Image 1 (tube, rainbow, N blue to C red):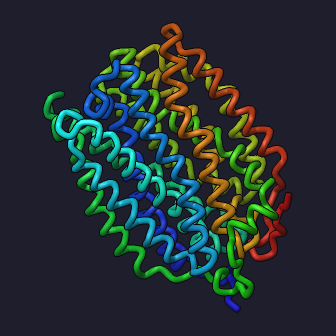
Image 2: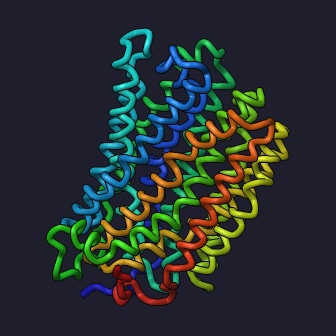
Image 3: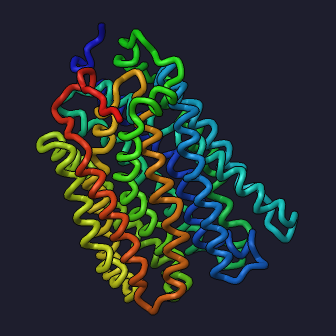
Length: 434
């Protein structure tokens, strides 16, 4: 049998780089929609609504992507546990890339009426379906190749992908926003990042075509016939705990990157360029700290880092909304950075932690379903709830701070109930059953 601990560093570096690149491309596809929803989709696809209602409706289509992600994790998790991790990476990238490009061609409401938002809804669902499979495949392929003592470090490379994807998506949006008039941006400029997804997807498919299958998958003799059934019967408690634990990460990230963008431009009157620059600078800090936090996770354990990140999130949400409400770039950047540092303290080690919690035969399904259910709890609802709470508050949206703090406390309780897994090798980890 293969031994995952014998994989050499140069091979790991190539594998991690390919996983990072593919994850970055898929999250670019997902994030570019979120930015467009915050900036332009409301007036174009829901013109009969008030400005706030239009933003809520646009965020509703944004949330559909999160609802689809657990379904995608079930579909692609089945493939990953039955056929291998590598096919998941190729199929999910095809689906996400094609649906993202198609968004760029959807006519606005004034051209085809109600069919416009319905098409948007369908394509966003397909985006989420593809991304639901992406994370599990990319993370498992890296984690199951990695040596046990550096599993969190190597597994953190795919976790850098979302930061890179976000910066790509918003960098394109920022450049277009800064160089085009408002009319040009609304007419065709916002579509360019969606069209660019096609070239990125082809590049990602080329990178992933040479990846080797996970040695741990090749060692499995008793593949689960229906992995989702096994997970539902024997790991339901673990799935619920991981979903609740991860909810705060999604809530914090999308409060910073999606809701605050809409709030800053619409309620505070801050320009799109300033808001995007502040958020992107904070994301750069978060991405840079990812391997550092992962190394700490290899040294001190997964659970302590997760508990520390949850605690920091609970303590920082009120200061973050207060700093946002000032409308001052440096103060907003400070608020966003504090929130994203707390976020990455947890999520830098999640890519190692979740696979270690599940037995290999159902790992792709179990880890991906738990991860993406957390996205429904924290990511799908946060922009919608935060927008509604801010609408009925004063200049400082304290209700948003209270909402995010409550989610952080919920996640803290869930993490407290999960076991530590370091330094147990993946192959020997005992599953937590319920």
